[in-house]
Structures are given as structure tokens and as C-alpha cells.
Length: 233
Image (tube, rainbow, N blue to C red; front, side):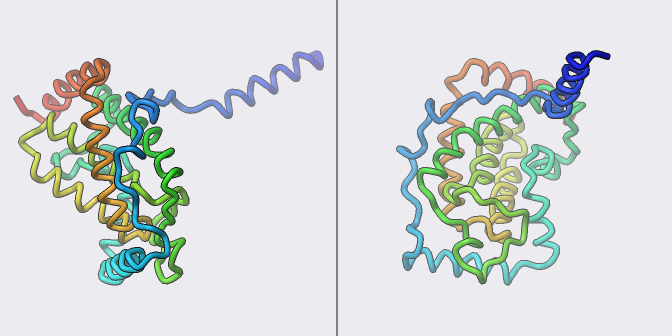
């Protein structure tokens, strides 16, 4: 083998090793389409009296949490549809069985990420465990801005969409949203004020999605697939 061919072979293997296992879905919206900074109220200021009150709420939540609830908070770091809502729907939600549904909710997740990331950067709210050494990172730590909560944004968008597909489960879906979001407080990753921002952000994204033809097409495909999978007419 010539030196040139050897080098090309090494480069090819390196490219394969670093390539993603699968292509990520494209977001329905970007921050250019929906600027949350202009929509959301500003967060509580770092170091203010209100900030200290929020820290006290997080500390109280951590001290009150049972070991089982802390374990749940660790599981709730995962933002998959299965983790968020399988228990509510009464069946596991395997990706292999629900390709259209997973495509829809993966694109929703990508949308949340690209819309919320610059918003966090703009507001620069310090996370609880970074602002108070008494607050412990009880789940896998995140270091991006705390406001708005990305997990809460994501679960709110997902809940609005899922409840439109399975309105029979609307009440338990929203109960799960509140529980899932509170896991972020117990974990030391967010203040209650961040959850409020996430709920507003999620609602804004869900409303904006309604004007996207590609979202509507994906929603209808997921509706047919998921209702059939759940045995619903």
C-alpha cells in the first residue's frame, strides 16, 4: 500500500468513527423565527432578595425529597418521549415501533434546543447549585444559563402537542408536566422562576409551530400512528 493510500484509509476510518450514529432531525423553528428574549419577562436578578428566596425554595425541595424522589429526578434528566410520558399513556414508547411519532417529537426537541439556547445566554441567570454551595447538584449537572428551564420548555411543548393527539389523557399529561419540571428544582438545576419561564417559552413555541406546514404534516402522521399503537379510535 502506498503512503498516500494509507493516509486516505486512515482519514476514512477517522471520518467513520466521528460520524453521528444517526442524522439529527431539523428544528421546525430557530431563534431567528422566535426570539424568546422579547417575549419572556426577565428572570429574578442574581444576588437579589428574590434570588435568595428562590434559593430557599430549592433548598427546602432538596431536603424534603425522599431517596426515591431523587432517583426519579435523576431519571427525569432524560428528555425522551418515553421518559416524559410513557407511564401516563400506559405503554412503553419504543422508537422502532413509532417512527412518525419519534420524528415529530425529536424535531420538537431540536426546536426547543435551538430556540432556548440563545435565550439562556442572553439572560445569564446562574443555576442554583452554582449560586449557593448549600444547594447540591443531585442530578447530572448542567452549566448553561438557568432561565428559562430547557427541560420545562421541552416538556410543555411536548405536552401541548401530545394532548392534542391524545386528549383522553390531557389531565394526567399535565400532572406529569408539573412533576417532571419539579425534578429540575429537586436536582438543584433550576429555580421555580425558571420553570415559569419554561412554561411560557414552551407555550410560545407550541403556538408558533401551528403556522408551520411541515409541523402539521408530521403531527397528522404521528396522530394516526400513536392512536393506533395505543388502541384508540
